[in-house]
Length: 381
Image (cartoon, rainbow, N blue to C red):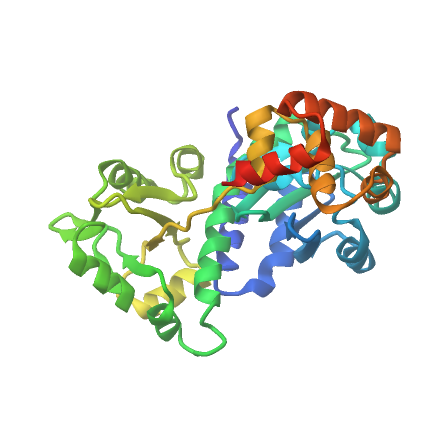
């Protein structure tokens, strides 16, 4: 889909604002507003939810009433029909609520009637920023009644932004771990666990933190050469070079060739991940990084990959091809005792719970609930 110059300029402005949040998280609400204007959404938020305890929290938001943010935290996390299936979606993959649950069924849910509809919300486009075993941080753009269901136009626009939002959030997480204890960016970067390289226009590292110097000394993940910094993994190196060679203004190219995470493996088989952040000209983020290094075209963060074990629920969902509705019932069955309790927790009828349980039993090849729970525990192993 070819974009007009005005659309490209608007996209560039949004991406620039996303990266400004790396050093100033107070900019997220206005950035979320810009994202809504670009995508056509009515509201947006960054939030997390945990399937192990039913807890969820909104971290940043725009267009959502603060009272409903409180109600979401206290009451509606587990009442959302897309919970917990949405937690298990691969990070960066954009999906709509209506893809997980038929919208007719979604509209009859208590979550829609008491939380979404009173605010004029209709559907949502979502992607997970980062996943853990049974929890995930996520980003969503919520449509209003006038827009209706999430369409391909909105999905395409959010896909263009997703890797940048992921990258900014993950880098912010790295820097944010230390910022309360130190004042200068240089001190903060020296104390983060990740290796940090500030790269000039030619790909040469103009500044490195202590972790980066240690990684360079190893020589099996990253090394310095005559043509600049290089990743030892050939596929990762190609991605890095392609991204650095691109014109920052030509976002349309980078958005489709440049993933949020660059994955690589060292000689011993250990997995590593890198986040590459291209710095916008004249941005405060670029200025701040240039105060650390002599020239700043990009910031590269490298850390050892964190293994994310699958939960038993997720493993069973994949192994047995469970639907989102069946995943909800399976999750409730592991945590509650009776059909009546499951129905109350999920805001569905006892008969619906029984039908889902029968379908789960058939798919998993069991006839009793105890055997089903044992299968969940075994699947986690």
